[in-house]
Image (tube, rainbow, N blue to C red):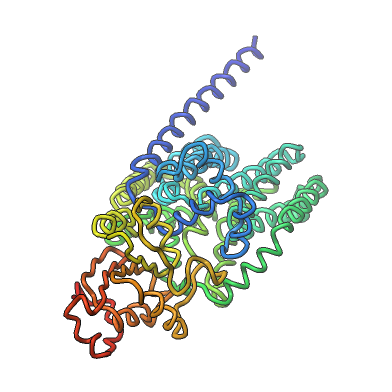
Length: 523
């Protein structure tokens, strides 16, 4: 009878956990799917869609030639888009699914390290986390990177908990590792942190029975990743030559840490106080758990610390050579970070204070969600394409600088309108570069390109990086006349006419106005 009672209690707990996870999962799904198509696809998302719609061999060839990322996200998007469609909501919903699938892993990690309370706190906070909601609504690989890392951490903790590694532990660790490596090249930092924690546990801790299976998993990861390493070397060479990410500062690092628990919230007054409380709780969790844990119980905390801190330090160490420190590429740090703060709250000696801190944290996340849903469109290509389509005439020339911004524009521009499209300084990817730089030697080709057309539209964006000297508008201002200028965040559209059709005297006299790209509504 006692066994039956124990079994029924276990079933009830499992059923309660399942129902609770379904409820929190539905909350996470609703928050991530809400207003999914509100913003236009920005240039990176449009590039994802363009790549995913290419034939498989051409897709992989383009990735190897011009991109800086591994192929896994694009491959999954290719299959997803063919089933669910290529609308904004359709392509972004793939990231929603990866993010929601991460939630039960966060719950399991918290439960493994600190018990049921920690698991539920971590799961609810992850469901509400503005940073993860934000990147679950983007057609890029960051939600996939987070899922792969969370799967690796969960599998590694299973090894440490059960001491004897089972075959499915090894499969989960291998699948999570390959997913992380092929989701984003920064994934190597997370894989290195997880494997580093397991190696320490196996050789300096009680996990000696896991040495051989761990060696097999590492060998499989090296072989699987090694297939892409030659391409990675080529991609890394391009990044080393020229890349747009700025060098990190102390403010960059502080903003990253804050984004992990309070993204899209104000940065003054009470909010700074809550930041300090949460960071103090994080430090308290680390100190108490390392102090109280003995023997086997210490290693899960060490693993979580490694995954939280090591990728950040490694990215900072590499950045003096080539800046790679970005919040979105380090987003997977948010999984162990949330779990550690949940641990601190659950083990804090004054539980009323801990409860008050948890309520403040959840309120902060809700405030951040408002910021996610109301943030302005960073690149409103939908509006730009609609505006141009209303005014354009058949036979007009549309010039795109930078050339790859034609991708988000064309996503929204009606295909039936007969216009000529060209990229500047070269048409799309003709130099084998994703982001070709406009140079003085490209000026004659640009002059020759626009010569036959009475009306020329310049769609001008990302110029701070690809045309810092303003060669494109300077050249067009020297040979054509500005009819109208329209401005959106990050995008400028200028309509040029031939000088014989206007009273544009400076062109008639052969004068060059220089870089006047920023002049308002010049005519």
